[in-house]
Length: 137
Image 1: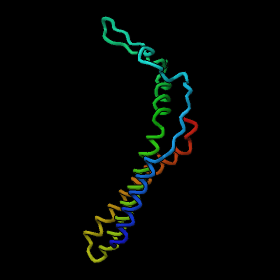
Image 2 (image 1 turned 60 degrees about the vertical axis):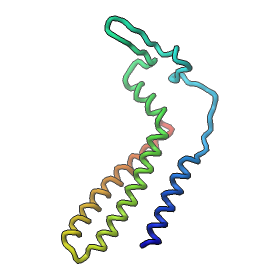
Image 3 (image 1 turned 90 degrees about the horizontal axis):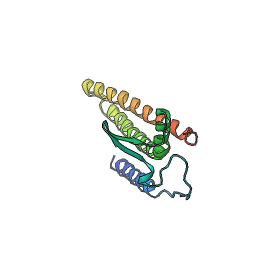
Image 4 (image 1 turned 135 degrees about the horizontal axis):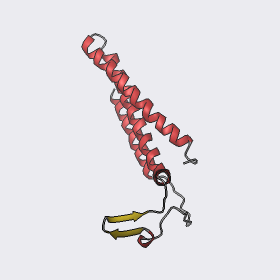
């Protein structure tokens, strides 16, 4: 059991190290949705208060801009969450196997397996969908 815990800890540390050691290519090209300086943002003040013009006309354009800027963060957070929930899912199966003679502990372990399974499925689906449509966003 101690070997399994140390191996899982090693895998977790390696995932964190690989997360922050990801090479990123930066190109010196701007697109129409990025602002070059603070003066490019249309900030005006009238009797109603401040008004900010970010250069997008519809709410869909604003959401597309948010997803375009933060798609790597969404993919990374959902991926780490899915891996973490997978570890919790495995841990719940270990608890289920250890509670063979105790009906109350077995019921709690089954409930834990169900909830962590649903969470793992949900976070994994987000990761797969964002990864699959990564270039379409």
